[in-house]
Length: 310
Length: 181
Image (tube, rainbow over all chains, first blue to last red; front, side, top):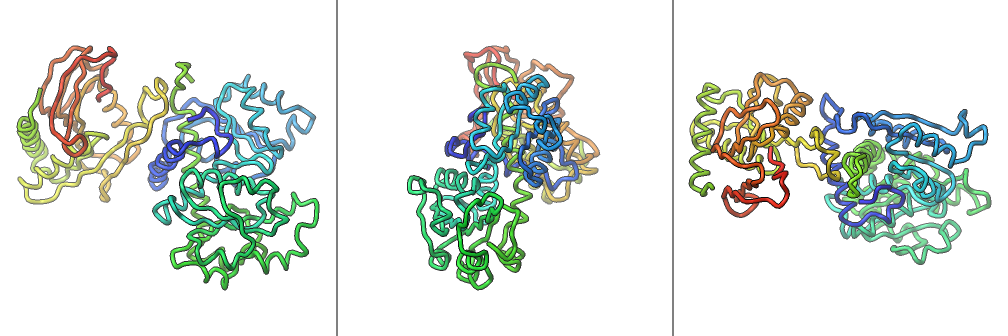
């Protein structure tokens, strides 16, 4: 495995399976009265969040703490960043404090990649711009495997705002590595220009895609990133690309509904769908902690082959 | 060093010793340490059941996350932990492993057990004790004492994993030897 986790595309099939298998074992510790493992005692994990994110930050924090690592939370608001400090200077500060891993969320695509060149510890990408969010893809894959027993040859339909979605890109890369068959369904204005080069197929008609989908993953409409009119109105979007109970009934009996959260209930997903038995949304949150524990353990738990002890 | 029939006899003797020392094995839970401790624990459980006529729970206890040598090697894959549903509180837990060597695996297992509950007693059964302890740990039940040099490598093969039963002794290219128990 790589020392950093920047892109889901960097993971080989063996890496991805190792993370999922490790997460499987770690998930069982969550059911025990004693949830903590001593493995990362004395290691420091810094959560460096330049964008607001409650669930991802808390998930990484819980994962690090369950492995007994020390956690330092650093959010851009009310910090030296608000005073104009550059990413590089912040990185050097963290380096001086002895961070063994930096979990970074940044609005600029490529920020984690730059950071990896400046610090000695491992860098984990917790979302960079519209680029990638690899641990989200890992937890989605983990959830599919737990619910449906496999990932290979699963038909996964990802619906909605692909253009602004780092979740979609990471999922396409990881799921294709794992052998799933991914279809993106979105209005043409919400698909990236280069989508033709992605390892997946593309469609525009949700009703046609649903009957053959084992998994349907609804993406949040990211209105805060939309600086132009990508669709005529929220109502029209919802009518054509929102998942309501009638559409959910088109899924095969074993089909599941996923959403990375936070949801816009009534826009991309109806409340009755989000709360139905097919929805894995709450499981995804719990699985997120197990998967992030696996990533932190595999990045920080051992020595690197250079012989350097970390 | 050990033929299949000798392994079989050693396990049968250990099973009888466990019954003797635990007054019939009423509260006994066998926990095998992955990888090869797990099938050994299952074989011992079968023998205990044959003799006493009631089932003895067997499971597995992975100790990877508790090891003290994690930082000496790349992060390794985890084994499976499966504790019988009744839990380990107030039970007599017999840890089962293939080779007892430095004692560090057993130390890690004791820490792992502490996070799972509070057994009434913890005992240790091994197929081979090869000596060279680095910690104050000893086995309660030993299939075979095998005096070795630290340059030698002890390998236990089991049908469930390796397709045959055998205990092999050989020279090792790296002087550290097998990281067995």
